[in-house]
Length: 83
Picture 1 (cartoon, one colour):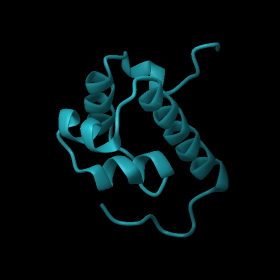
Picture 2: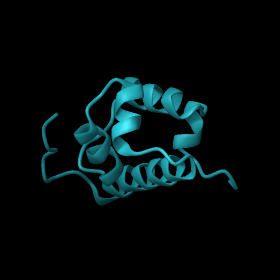
Picture 3: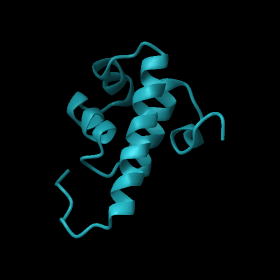
C-alpha cells in the first residue's frame, strides 16, 4: 500500500482517522493485540497499524476480514455503539 497524495480533502482524512480510532477501541475492548488481529485477519501487523492510525485507506476486503477476526458485524467499524 502506498501513501495517499497530499491533495486529499481534510474531511476524508478525518473519516479515516475516526474509523481507525473505532478499530483501536474495539480491539482493546477485546484484549486483542495488533499482532493477533493481523494473524486472524490474514494481514501484517504493519497493515493493521496503518489502518488504525489512518495512514492508509483500508479496502472493504480488509475491513471485512478485520470485523470477522474481531467477531463483530462490519457496520460496527463505521459507527459507535451508542449511535
